[in-house]
Image 1 (cartoon, rainbow over the protein chains, first blue to last red):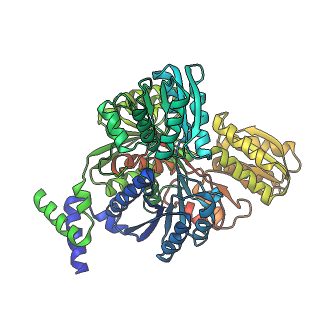
Image 2 (cartoon, each protein chain N blue to C red):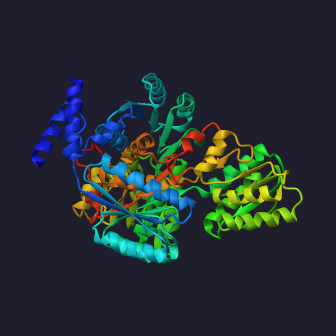
Image 3 (cartoon, rainbow over the protein chains, first blue to last red):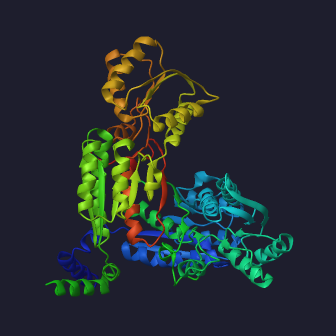
Length: 316
Length: 316
């Protein structure tokens, strides 16, 4: 049976030119992918894109098996790494819940000779990773700040921060730097943990404190949804727009549809997990140096290019 | 005939699972690759790897056509871009001869809506590129410096620089920073243009000037060859080793064979052109965000890992 299939495939290859190369260099490789479960919007997108890319890469590279495991917290993720290791993976693509709980477990996987790709949140010891794929957080802040400078030109802005982290610091510092020399003034900023409900409450406070707000840098699409709800309930007409960040499909749809309150967004794509899986496959199938750091651009999403960022089938 | 081929391919796919996906999503894409001709060792490696990867990517992605064009100088490369544009390329992968002559021509290609990947040497306006793939020059210097600190521990070292450029500056600054706190002393440094003959002459000067040299940072494999010849002709026995850089196959072979004068090398792989071509193909076939900056690690090549860096069929 196997012989027949191979002969048929070879015959087809002679005519169609599709399969001969693949058969000639077939190589068995297993890539394990360990990611947070869909506990909130962005990680929901990560799960969706990881699963889609697993299917796609297995089609592209005969001999490649991709095993995706999701975990609800850091401790479970450490256990999931043991399970993946038991399946004799050649490479691990990991988006760690956090650096503290995952650094040692990932290092244990590394010590078995496994190729390691880390995504988004770094480990405490960067020498563990062979590849690092991340968003561009300084640029994320810069692109957003430039949007306010170019489009609001002057006025009062309130700023939402996420969780106190290096990422958050890089974003906010570069946002403020990009505003320099403009008439845009940051009149207040607060942490709201990249969380919709927290952002709702913080926005209610801002509305009570500040009689005149011209625009909001939500800096995150989940937070933007909470902020929009607070503005709606507060019946405030002074706010011209809210700029989020990430590229949630509902927000991208609003941009695409010309919604005045959501005129733009800044990308920080959960599909960077797909980029990481693709370059990790490259380590085995591309015959090219792949060890290094791949920083994915933060891009301004506007009506003109929104369709490139819209994934209607993704949960995020 | 075409009908028969497709039916056979589909039948084979049912058994072997190889072709159905590829047929379902076939997409016609042309990638143009513009690189310097094999005017010296490293660019010879670039040409070899570009051609190998073109074949490989065309096998992996049915519907993909890759056109590789080599040019002997900057002006010819600008013309080559016109030729590629006439072939209606969807993406351009370009390793520019220099920034001055190529920035405007590449920008013209960009204006037609072509996706642009720049490799190694940056353009004067980085906003032209969608992807930038480069070696890690600060790390190249750091890895080399650490090798002297760990292995020579103390002694007199002479340093070869390339051509006065940002790349060269980053390498040398980080080399010297890595030596801090060690007994390794840089007693002389000179430019030798990443050129074998120039390095031969500079090394003759160094030998005449300095009665005691413990080791040489050639910083480049081509220069290392000139330096070795000067040492041989000068019959000097004081020099313990020469550390080059790039990963030229003759040097990697010496490392692999345990040559005492060439105990290690630092990678700066011409195969980064292959990485660039691979991620550019990803823009069309991987459904993942690829726009960004990919910095390839500079790695220490030793007897233990040299086989991973050895390409016997490459001219470099």
